[in-house]
Amino acid sequence: MKTCATIITRSSIFIFLLIIIACNNTNQPSEKTNEEKKAKIPVPSFNADSAYTFVKQQVDFGPRVCNTPAHEKCAGFLAEKLRSYGAKVAVQEGLVAAYNGTQLRIKNIIASYKPSAMSRVLILSHWDSRPYADHDPDPKNHDKPIDGANDGASGVGVILEIARQVSISSPTIGVDLLLVDAEDYGPPQDQMKNEDTSDWWGLGTQYWAKQQHAAGYSARYGILLDMVGAPNATFLMEAVSMNFAPSVVKNIWSAGNNIGYSDYFIFEQGGAITDDHLFINKILNLPTIDIIHLDRTSQTGFYPYWHTVKDDIQSIDKNTLKAVGQTLLTVIYREQ
Image (cartoon, one colour):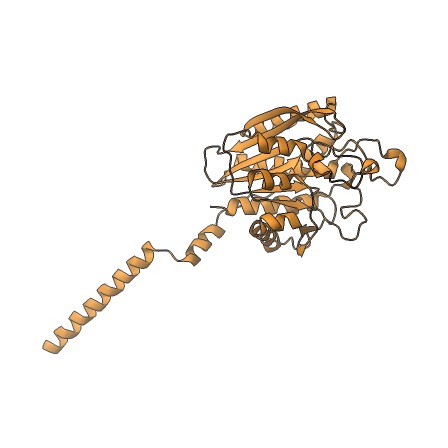
């Protein structure tokens, strides 16, 4: 009897200790458990047909060159579309001087979701189009404005579809969508000299970075979309992005590869591009990267119809819009 009593007592203590250990493990979830929970957050399905329609609607206004009726009408359309998706929308108007002294009436359009949330992500694209087809193979077209279906409208189309999805299913973080103006009003290629002309590009972004729509604005990081709609686009890891925000680049490229878009998001470093993200990094010190079509096989380094009259709706591919849009939704909805 003494022996049996001793055995029962020891067994009871052992079981009691197991219960305590189990409770402690329940109160302190492992890193693997956190990752599993993160993976279960539903990511909306990006609708490429919808994004394509948004691209076409912009192009249908005609070239969206500053100081033109098409530019004014498209600005109203974009702001109203974002409002219809439940965003808090601000239109930042201003005057900026172009390379030739022309005063450009610009409109930066900012749409915010969960504006009071401290944790935020910024996604941006320029919505204006270039006044010169200065890389067209026919010199007679060099003074013609372009539709900018890929160079401008594609990124905005992706952003509008993201806004539509966010209005249906809200992510856990705040999201700001920034449509910047006067990005593409730089000097024509025929007039360029050897001096640095970088500050004549991204005029709307420079204006916004210096005079933000909300005092003290900050975000975890920014993602710029530029030329994200051409067939078989290749997005190399652009050098300015890798200099200022390499971890952001790698996170986005990994997300794209993990969901099946390795043909688009290529783990190779590309050249440095003077684009809107450069000014946000330099002026605001906000780590911002550029998803931009870089093509090492072309003479310009960009897609074949860059700054030509053929940058029209025929140059847009829904598969590319899907690859970029679904990757961004995955990144946004996986943030905690």
